[in-house]
Image (cartoon, rainbow, N blue to C red):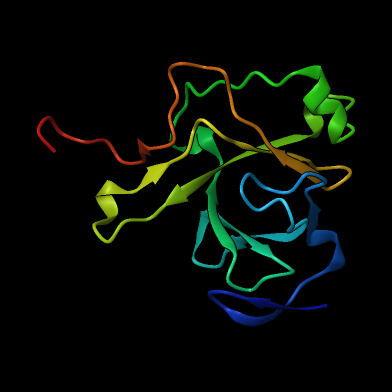
Length: 145
C-alpha cells in the first residue's frame, strides 16, 4: 500500500505495518490507524504516521535505549484492551520532541505507547508513577543547562 507521510512523502508499506489504536492516541482519539517504521538513517528512532491525517506523525524511541532503568506498570484491564496474553507480545515506545538545539530534546516517559506486536493493537497510557513526567531530557544535561 502507498502511505502519505509527513516527512518522507509517499512511501510503500506492507499491510503488516498497520497499528490500530482502538481508543486513539490521547488528544487524537478520532485517528485510529497508524503505520510504524524505523527511521532510515537511525535504527533507534521510529515514526508513527497516521494513515488518516498526513500531518500527524510522532517520533518515537524504545525507552530502554535511552533510559535503562525505565519501568512501566500496566494494568490487566489496559492489557486486555489490546488482547495481550503474554508480556513477550509487548513493545513499548515513548514520544519524543526534537528541539532546535538537539541536546535539549525530550521524551514523554509519563505516557508510553504500548503495542501488542502480535495483534498490532496499541494504546497510550498515563503511568501513575511520580518519577516520570512528559519532558525528560534524552541526552544528559550538565548543571546549569
